[in-house]
Length: 233
Image: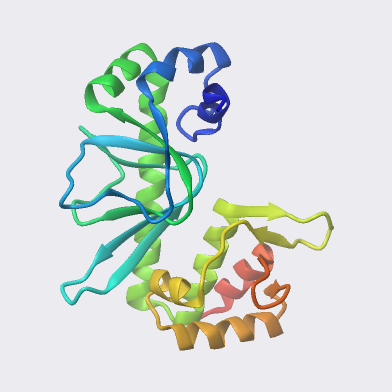
């Protein structure tokens, strides 16, 4: 694999030039991680920062009754984990690949050395952590006070930002490059599968989303979804 190319796509490193990225290769070992592999759990404490070079990772927690609640989905360029003061993590979270992925990681000492030589990375990390916390707070507030409709609209909009690919048309459609079942959407939105299925049917009728067949990719209209969110009680 071209490691330099992968590193340049990582959210944390995308403002560095190629020479700077090449200097970081030796502290960010990468490996191919098979689908359904547990990377981090409360029972496997690892003070490391993980970077998704390709593939997808699911962050979730487990309730006392054993029910899994998906907290976030991370794709190419996203970061998770904890090292020292820099954390995007909770000690109750699990991280699992949901497809074959390429993941690199860096330990506390290595990351501190990198930040000393590249202070801009420290500032970038603070920005990333702040954005992650804001997003989680928004979803928690919606789960506590918002309707299922508004939570699902918020989720689809965030997925379009993270995993969306604009289609070759001027009609505003964005195709989600991630496959999620209705149960998985329900888990993230804090609802049940049957309710999510009914809401998605309504969204199709309203022209907010579309799908080519039962197993086809989901396409969304981000601008229409934003307006629909604003109209929610």
